[in-house]
Image (cartoon, rainbow, N blue to C red; front, side, top):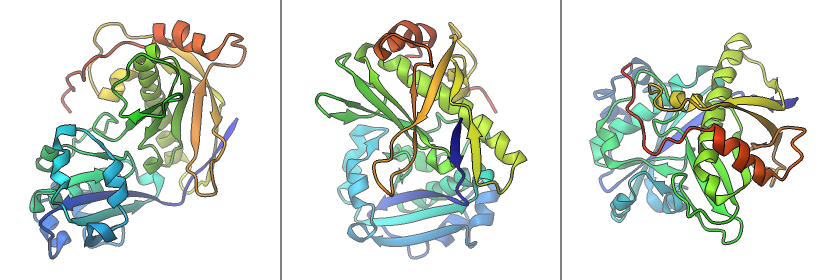
Length: 309
């Protein structure tokens, strides 16, 4: 079994980078938000605003290294000399609604000042058109809540989770689950040719773990520790739940996966769970990725059409 520490509170920080700072971001948001919970959070201690010059916000370096949902829009930061930091605070049992409400506020603040939104947990800058949208009533991870970052063990080059050259072994890590009180996920030693299957496995695993986590929290409010099995079953069909889409093509097959806590890299390091072959799999891990995971996970080359709420 694996012991998970449940934080008393989790934060949802979003940064609006803009060339046009607002005198009162909360007032600008108040007349624009659509979610009732977002309106309730405005002016409460559960949502905080902090406006600073970009060099003083504490987020300048993070924005400089962030992934972009639309890389061709990176030039928008050239004149964004001001950061409006919007941070939601809530216990894990209140998620994902509180995170959605905080992001709704970030959306409308960005709309009011023509800014771009940086999600500090998923370490990505959302599309510029994001500011004109609305939070979908049905939560799903594919709505820019989870990113996957990939590094190659040989060259150390990194990038977002949708590419790869089919080369040597890769390491994949998710970004975005911490905001919901869960560890991030990691996959190591993944052959380059099995990249898409590994990304799908982590997405399906995240969907399953989150659903179980929220159901457990609802029955154990205020608990600070939860025990989960070290071995679980990942269903390839959960990729459609990741996208909140109707199944299309092959549904995929279940895969037994062993989870283990990653060794901490420092006193302030965030927790990670490493996904790998189950106990009793005697062959090298690369064969598990190639002969088991790659054959079981459905291939989804493009984002499928989302079902209506």
